[in-house]
Image 1 (spheres, rainbow, N blue to C red):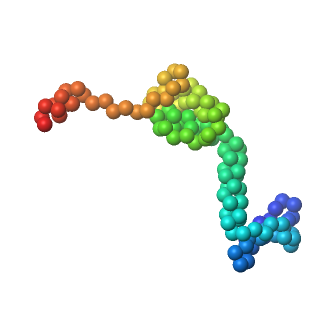
Image 2: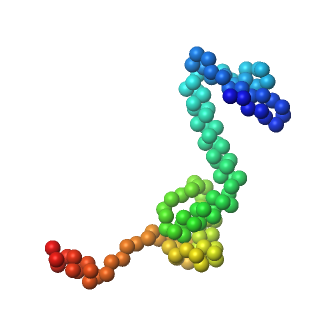
Image 3: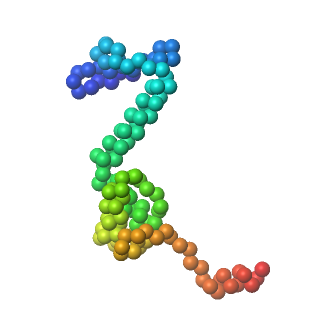
Amino acid sequence: MDVHTPKSQTVTVRHELGRVMLIVDGHLVLDMTWQQALELGRATIFQARKAEELVKVDQVIYDQAILMRAGVPLQLTTNKDMAKIAGNEAAWNSNLRRYMPDKIDQSGIMYPPTVVQDKEVMQEAVTSK
């Protein structure tokens, strides 16, 4: 696999006999086992996702606010500051408040959706058994 970087460098990743090599402009930069290459790849992907989260901070906050407004207990970020801003956005964004049902009280606490049954229907179900 060849990758061209902005400074006219050519980066090549090769494998030979269970080893993975990173070659930049014809010079060997990294020579590692396949296990080490997998760990480096995982760490690179993790850091790239964190960088993407910071670049797309506005979209992550808005998406998190929509989930909170809908009562979905799913976190898109582990960043506490972003989660706090998303909570405020879910509670006070006028468009979200207008177009989505209220699953959040005015203090920003999220309540999951609940199922409410008619007492008469429940009573009939219990007595019919």
